[in-house]
Length: 172
Image 1 (cartoon, rainbow, N blue to C red):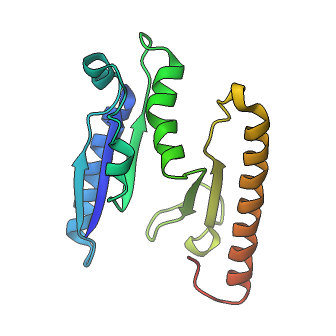
Image 2: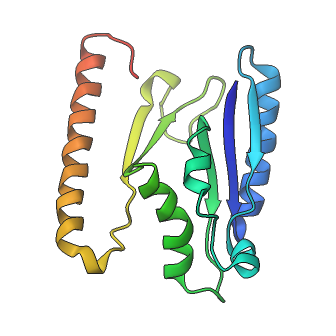
């Protein structure tokens, strides 16, 4: 069973995440051995207005029991960005050591690519995005050191991926 923590957050995040959950539910029904359980969290701006924090203190610990986090967006005009960013997204990223965001990209079977003469086998990419947002002005030296570490980790990851593909081993 895949347990997914769903955090729609604010603004368009609620619309996008709700639609995405419906797609994942349909996929789970149509694919064998893909049981998915969703647990929705109401963390975000509305939670902040009621409780004075973007998420509860024990929130990060609670998220550790999930297979994945499906996160929308955070922020509304009436709450300063540093509160929404530090109080929710970065609190989760840093609390769970999510310093890089891996986004695999593949052309799915039966889908015609808008790219000319591209087939399913031609697109198997991974985008790796640094995930700390570098929003730590008071810790600039530490951020630079951490950013260098993250970049080194990303290079090692990519080297391993290239070597595995070159050797014909399954990609992890």
